[in-house]
Length: 276
Image (cartoon, rainbow, N blue to C red; front, side):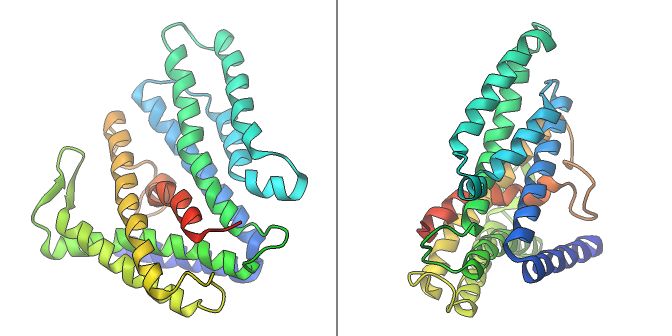
């Protein structure tokens, strides 16, 4: 627990420093790095499962796909072209670089990783990327992204602490034996409080509809989807017979263990914010 607390504090310091000193560009680098490292660990899980994804090219395409909204604003590159291009590249490579026994699994696992990780996390990039005639300031966009991260991650912490204190009823014992319904409810309640608090502190930068009350209500689907995403990762790890996706972060595990709750939350947050 001590390592987990230390890593959590350190990560929040890194995130806060990047946003404070480097603003949008710092956030872009962090999100892309998180996406690529998460995709790397996803492909390692696929290898452990017995599949053979195109991991190096997959990570390269994943970084570009994650940056898609920013590339569109800066250079006019339609982000919708990147995933079809990846499908073409991997379909061609498939014929000469994989055996008949692994071809279907190689293509499926490579492309699923791109969709599940890179396409979903690109919504964080869409949130922080200023657009022409923007109705939200660049600082406001950074704070909205921070709101999603805080709501999703504090749900993890709240669920852990509540589950340890009063958890009795197992949520999904075959997938994640330690998760309880009491912990999940506690995590959602804490997320609502954090969501309302951040919205109140950033009230001068948030869109008008993001009042503390609405932020608390918006936190509910973000928190619930964070729990679902964590269970999805547990399914993948159990299939690969691996406890943690990696050892990048002491006390927490790999980057996938850190970013899992953001994957499903990012697109929902983007649409809740009603950003242009």
